[in-house]
Length: 343
Image 1 (cartoon, rainbow, N blue to C red):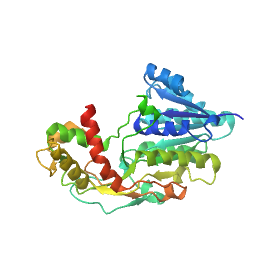
Image 2: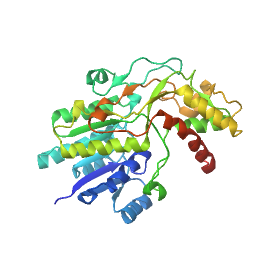
Image 3: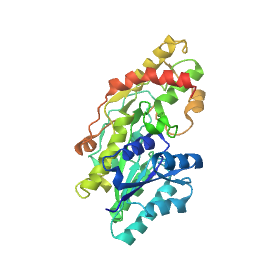
Image 4: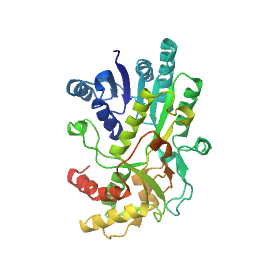
């Protein structure tokens, strides 16, 4: 049997490494030839020697290399720098080359994010709009200026042209410390972005913080449930390529609950206060200067609303095991780990 080739970007990252670990332990992993793109030559060597993964040294700015790797792959899974339009275009160019050579459309599983749904609440109100991943028209109506939208629309257009089958995954507020063989080997980042960033900012200012009044809401999903969704889509795309929604309809939200940012920041502040790391158990609003220092001048994920329900994701068999209660319970161990490791 000819082995199927999988090309993965972001293998050392929080989500990408978790997806890779599942592919390495897939029930038919022997049928896969997995290739990853990494910037570090030593890590590339270890991926190959320790885990049997073919590793290509390079970055997303090396467009000719990206194009070649995508042209050689049956499946491309992207989890790194998801707003990089030139990298996306290079990957799609490679996929078109493969389609012309084989007559079979290769598969792209692209990472986007529910940040595409965000508003400008600045923590001052709770948004009422809840998006559903089966209501495609509402997602398509979002302006191309929204985070991720330009890349996402470019990918859907490739599916419409017929030379690729595309599936877009929308992680939400992903939480939990990733634990697998790759994190144990020091090859994968075990931390998310959102909660650890809030924790580090609060530790630095000596006071639990929030954006505005923290009234905004976001969906959440545990890293293991998030990685499982990629595998669900991967498996369904192999077993039932025509019956699994793709292209315009291949939009898959990842959520297993939602939270108000105030509740997260309040719990974080109480824990930090109990440790002597916050002046008060009540979170205070980040000043404009602090906001720029800790979060930069990009999209305000920490003060925006991003509300959704993952109807389509669940329709293909994805069944997340965790809930918002698990997210709340993860805050203390996350804080303890960050303080202990100084990361």
